[in-house]
Length: 247
Image 1 (tube, rainbow, N blue to C red):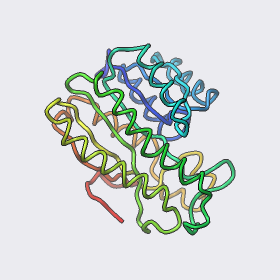
Image 2 (cartoon, rainbow, N blue to C red):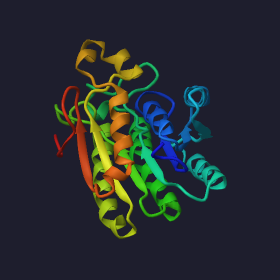
Image 3 (tube, one colour):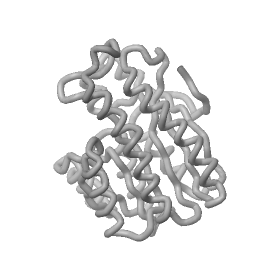
Image 4 (spheres, helix red, strand yellow):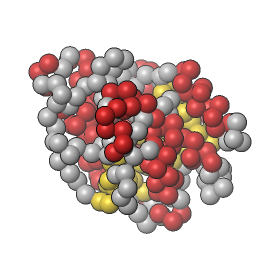
């Protein structure tokens, strides 16, 4: 129970990587604030946590809408005066029946571009801004990015949002070093989430499991990583985490 008495906020906790991270941090003893907009899926994550003895609460908010995001922040602040861990997972790379890949930039609907930036970069920035005053020494901020082995072509909005969050990671780590708050990013390669299985079944054998990413998040949240900050770690199936920007 290395995270006992810790309060963790995990965005995008309704499915995939976010759900796996929430479950893993709860195993360590943290209370998990499950943040997102899909209530039934967040409640499913909560049940997976509580049936194993963990603690979690659902905090609804739509990150594409500033007022809704602000309301979510207010709800969390009403629940706690201390945020030990913030994990920004939420991002947009597909819709209900369409993957936003293999598309010329000019063909992207304008709203998809705005929503991708809002969820992938603006919301994490505002969550950090809101919760830094609540973070004690030893606080942890972890941002989830993504790998781009074939460059930006075909999914430019997502690429830009994730490159932006890596830059946010580096800048925040420098700014928060004197407060003893560690900031890192994880850049997973193809990940075997439900959505990935739906849209890219032909590559599923090359994809890393979400639980592996969750285990590394737990490491970065532990005392073992108290001196690790300002780093972007690439995770790929069958390889140890390594550092580096990539295009």
